[in-house]
Amino acid sequence: MAFSRLLVRPLLGAFFIANGIDSLRNAESLAREAKPVTDRFVPLVEKAAPAGTPVPTEAVTWVRINGVVQIAAAAALATGKFPRVASGVLAASLVPSTAAHYRFWEVSDPAVRREQLTDFLKNVSLTGGLLIAAGDTEGKPGLAWRAGRATRDVRREAGQLAHNAKREAKLVKAQLT
Image (cartoon, rainbow, N blue to C red):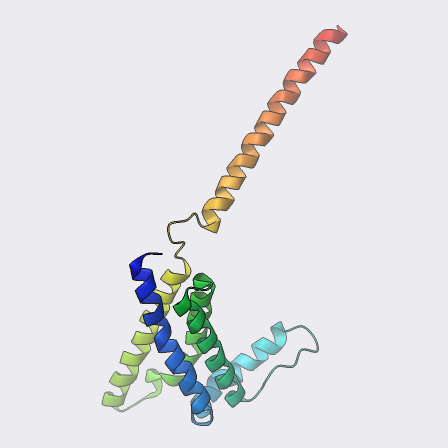
């Protein structure tokens, strides 16, 4: 593993571990900010979930779930366990928390608005970094390359089989005449 990955993954994960712990400690107060987001999110989850699956409806529960998800994914990223999956999960978890906490477009005070916008853009930047980390194959072929290679191999084999079948058919025809 490259030194940069060895250093950067724990640095990136540290923010989310701290953020997840904060979400667990302050779930009640954070839930007030998150309620507008969870009120829109819960019906979508209920629609997508298999029938009979219980879906939490309380904002405080979603804040806690997001906190646990961030801690677990950040720990995985920091230790190099499934770093691509962990990065993708963290990026996904950042979207609702950013929408809940940094609603700068609803703030009228210019100083608070500027602070909210700065924090919003920080989270957007973190999301970009996480998406880069989610795509980092560490120099190994990614799934898209492997799928393309497999497709080329199958096409080549199919072409070879068709060529051999035609040759065999000509031989059989020549023997029959």
